[in-house]
Length: 116
Image (cartoon, rainbow, N blue to C red; front, side, top):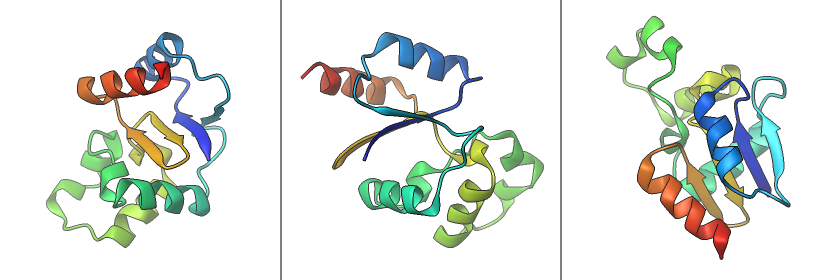
């Protein structure tokens, strides 16, 4: 899989897409086209857990009171599959390599990787 999972209304995602060359990548806008279970499972295999893909910044995280609940991997998987906002963004998958989220260190590693 060679994909970028992003949200078109997210300014950070827009900036990252503009600043990097994603030629050859399938751009997957997660609001208009839901993530499939197969795609999520593949991301989980590369990331090591569903939790690594889970955004605790999502508005629904607080609204649903999830910060006060112990979430299992299955719970996290289901939240990501049912609500696109629970996926950290962007997620860039290139074969066996994955970059998750928009932390500065991660974006620097992504940029260096894409320039290879």
